[in-house]
Length: 217
Figure 1 (cartoon, one colour):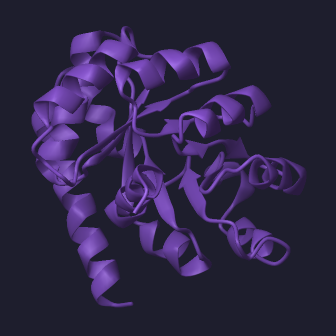
Figure 2: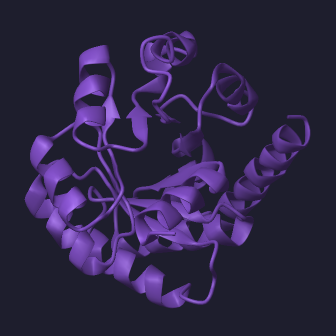
């Protein structure tokens, strides 16, 4: 299997991607560690975190022997940032919006690109430019009904829902047809207070809920 699709399968099979932010490099890094320790091993390090490229490179080195861990870059808004992330080793690229030039550079280097989309026009553009996984964002605004509605004209679209995802509604998003979920503050919020133990606990709860959902499919 091509590396691009191996990465996509890892992201999809993870069930949940942890969206990692942080006011400092140390906070973001420890947040990612806590999520992985808790069993959420797909990590999106956002470029709103200081030195995000260094965090990506260091996480890849730390977890090089764990085949389930996959490290990507988030909030990639332009091709320059995409290139920095790719050079750092980012295995997938995520953004809050769709950008043609980011799509092109990701295609050039065979890196999965997951752009944020909200409208049918956004989704059609993303698919046309080779996006294999589309981030429906923000989920809290578009609502769960948008997933099945989008699959009407775009049944081929694989959707990652980010924004408004929590432990209580995970199963509902999957039931509507989500491919994978992106979890932010509901998963990692305690990190802002330096409480990484609580992040580990919350990640374990997400993993347990994923296992329950998968068992009931």
